[in-house]
Length: 56
Image (tube, rainbow, N blue to C red; front, top):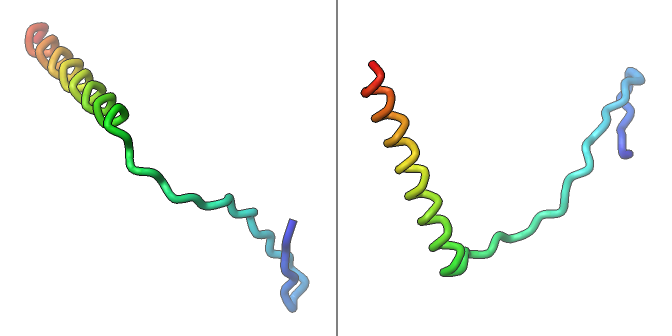
């Protein structure tokens, strides 16, 4: 673990930084999957809202 010592004797610990990487653009199949997930979320949310209106 890396640390520095100040003039007053205090230690400062620094976290180990993770390796960075560049994200890849999603493929057509991944984009289609995101579309279906979004549509499913919209349908689920609409169902919850409609159920709340029906109960109240």
